[in-house]
Image (cartoon, rainbow, N blue to C red; front, side, top):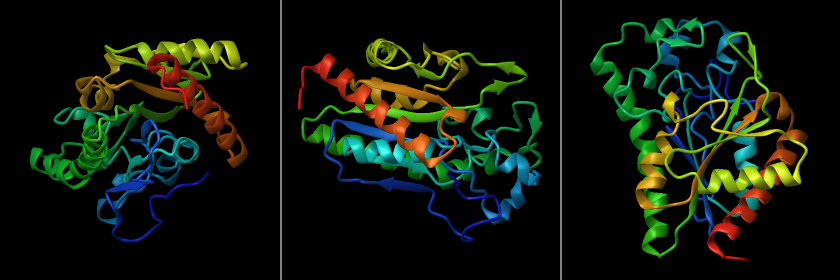
Length: 261
């Protein structure tokens, strides 16, 4: 799967993409790190092409998995249109990590020493449309007395800072662990993959912002799914992973709510 390269695409790209907005299923999907698109005026943030196509700029394969899951679950999918190096929509507003000057061990020249006014401008241009689209999607369902499960879809690199990761799929949660723990049990029982809870990241890393802001405050079931990106390198693998995860999600939802379809 290939998303936008830093130099590809039109000069103007929508700050958020909403796929299947009228989806009537039990889930709302989010893919905060879907794209590696860098607006031309940011001059690639001073980075080489190999870095702009690597995991520091986006989550390879995540959007393809999320799109298939959205189709299988009849769910809306909300995805920012720019790289997380431009603005990370999965971080609480105001944090330096929203516009990182360092990713893994790589300096991001275009973000170094960025003035607060420029940070606020990026938040208004890229985060605000994303958060408004997600809020609207949830609000429409709540008004209809529907309580969807919010799932965010990510991928992670097999090696981080020289350390091998020994998990295939991480299921992350914040204060509400119900859905993550139920999916964990199902995944361990029904697949040959290695599942882990709050790994390779956890709440202490600041990655559960979307879950806290959009799901937990409404009492909605939620989980952040992290898939090791070498497991979803091509279309067939992405499709298979999406079908498997969608199946686990449906069973977990039915188990926790008694809402069997």
